[in-house]
Amino acid sequence: MPELPELQALAEGLSSACVGRTITGATALQPAALKTAAPPLDALARRTVTDVWRRGKLIGVAAGDLTLVIHLMQGGRLGLTGRTAKRAGRTVAMSIAFEGGEELRLREAATEHRASVHLLDAAALATHPPLVRLGPEPLGLPGATWRERLASPPARLHTALRDGRRVAGIGRAYASDIKTGQ
Image (cartoon, rainbow, N blue to C red):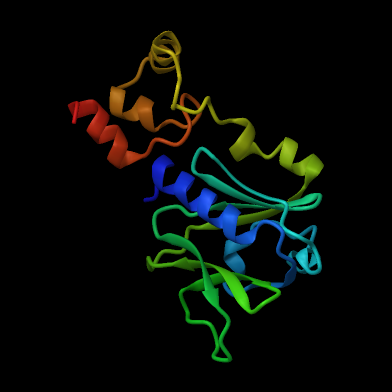
C-alpha cells in the first residue's frame, strides 16, 4: 500500500508533469472505481489541470472548479503513459487523456478492485467525508500533539497510528516500523 512518502513523491511528480496541461477526455474503464455520478467524468474535458495535491493517502487532481480525488488503496497505481491505439489493459480502471498524447492512468494490480475515484465540485470537496475526517499531517507534528492524538480514545499503538482520523497518511508498514522502533 502506498503511504505518505510514496504518495507525496507521486503528487509532486504528477504536479510537475500535469499542471498547466489540458485534459482532452476522461474514461472510467472499470465503472465501479468511479464513486460519483454528478458531475460526469467527461466534464473534465477541455479543462486545464491547476493543481495536484496529497492529503493523507488521497491524491487530488484539480482542474478549475472540479477535483478528482483518488484513493489508491492497496493495489492501485497512478502514472503517466503514452497513449496507444491498443485497448487499455484490463488493469486500467480510469484514464485521463491530455493534449500531446499522454494519459494519466489509474491501474489496479490486485484482483480485488478497491481503488476509488470521486469527481467533486468545490462544494462537495469541502464536505467530502474522507477528507474532512482526516487528522493532522504527521510531518512536523509537535510531540504534545502526537501524544494527544494517539492517546484518546485509548487503542493499541499500531491501530492508533493507522487511524487517519488521528494522524493522516500512516499505513500498516510505517505503523509497524514505528511500533518496533525501526
